[in-house]
Length: 78
Image (cartoon, rainbow, N blue to C red; front, side, top):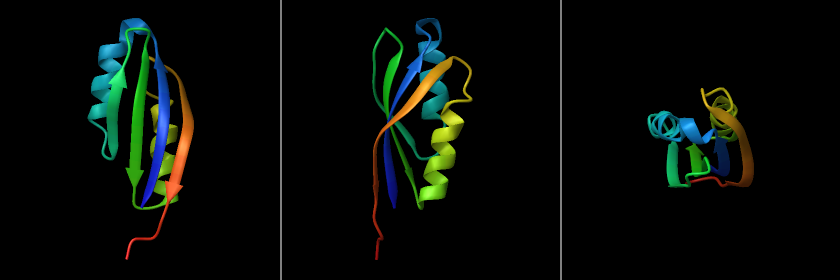
């Protein structure tokens, strides 16, 4: 299992749409959002490649300015 913590900066005008796009993605959970356009997100995947591919896709969402990886944890599950 691999978990990544990401801060996503969206344009404030697109915040609601970006949050909806994030919540529709597999393995992505939005934990908080601020009217300034910042969202706190976790990305979970079975392996590093799956998680990193998802984080890269965050950058491509309409209305996203940046997606900054702030935490990453990986461990083998049994």
